[in-house]
Length: 146
Image (tube, rainbow, N blue to C red; front, side, top):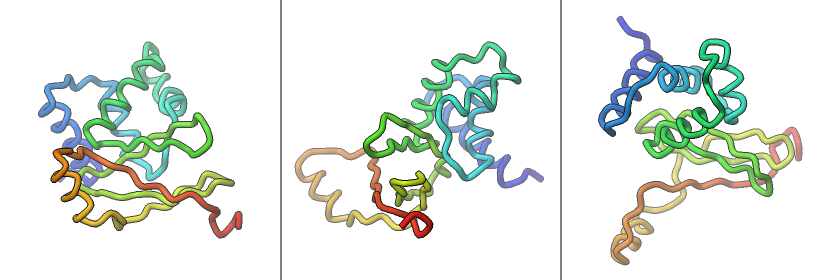
């Protein structure tokens, strides 16, 4: 019987196929890495983690793969406020969440509730705007840094 992690990876691979994208060993291992630990990764961290297994893996391939996975809502892209830093976090397909981010240490706390009411999205649709996704981030200081 497949573990929950294996089922999650298989589901993500199915999403790639449904989008008409190739399922490569590199893409599969990036998904496996991201799904395996509840944390954020930079492009460089993903590259470093997988470069021994995939010696020809370039930073550009990792960057493009993470952005593809973000378009499919498999990972979420998090821009740290007032920095050029971009990190990616696995997003369990179908699990929508937002973040509270500490401006001192960078700690991220998942917020399972969406603060945007359904009426907000209804008004966008009335204006003939079709939202595809959104991100909500609250910046402040965590208990350890306050």
